[in-house]
Length: 190
Image 1 (cartoon, rainbow, N blue to C red):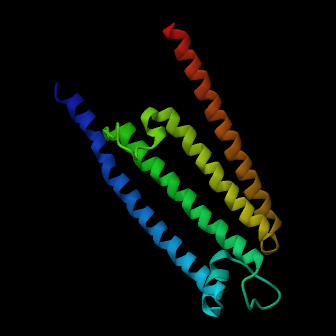
Image 2 (image 1 turned 90 degrees about the horizontal axis):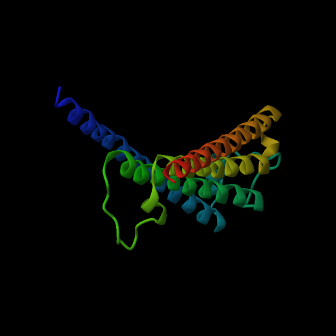
Image 3 (image 1 turned 60 degrees about the vertical axis):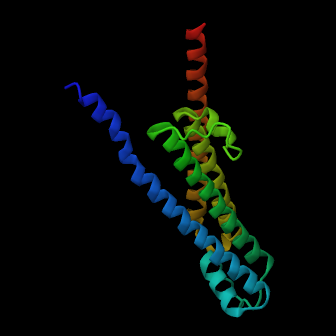
């Protein structure tokens, strides 16, 4: 029985393959970002094939044939690229913050590239940061949907809006609970 606490504590290393898998998922996002960016640049220089790939990837449809980039297509592609960046940022927060919080210290104190938020990361801070990142990602998705609203059913528009509001309310509840816990801990320590 005296080795059981050591075994339980060592079990945190079972999360390491999960974080490594998220790093691989981020590599896929980086590849996807560059593919879409190259298609955008090629389409800007007149490539019909690249334009067709872009239009297909963003789900844009028009009653008239699309012969060249237009402002709506550019905006939708740029929002898709921003979405990839925001999801990548979310992945970094989960990978670095989760590893630091739940697996092992990274010992980055004094490192010039240490993220500012990492010096005071804990499970509560990570929850609030993740909730905020999810709201940002949801906002980008909602904006993309409304820019391309003619290609969506009203039910899709309604449900995406409802889901976004649910994310907002959840983040507010998490932040409020976090604030209440922090003030409760501060009151107990005084």
